[in-house]
Image (cartoon, rainbow, N blue to C red; front, side, top):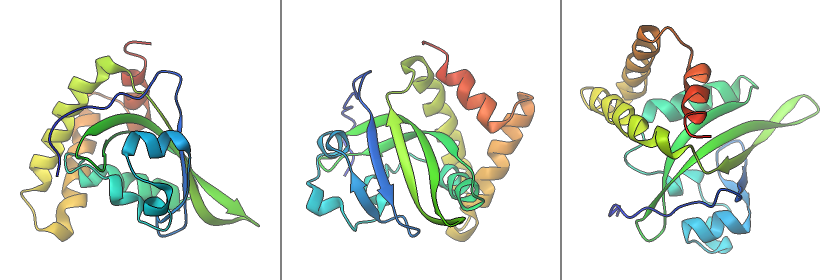
Length: 171
């Protein structure tokens, strides 16, 4: 159960994990385990969504999976949940893992995000969650995505350009 205490990822730390095609964890580095508070035995084979924070809009993960399944890398700001109910923010870079031209899993590197971007992200993610909540569960990802696309169109930018503008805010 989330309780609102933040765990900070060090500027020089990198969280690394790998998953299979279904999103089950096949590898987690020591930083991942320390930050999220799980033992390796609790994480391996578990769905990566084990650390999904309820404040994350479903459409962000919908976009992430859409891009990954098309064979491309994706970037995202993600608020994760620790075993104890704390949270931590990351700037994630997720890539498909290929073997003989086929996607066989996914690899994610996550680092500390630009702190100046977090208030803006909290506001954006709240707006997306509010929009998603207006719809039945099976329509929430699409509803959130329409809202996100409208916000990006208002700013005359793409998803990736928007993310990198946020990431550069305090670096």
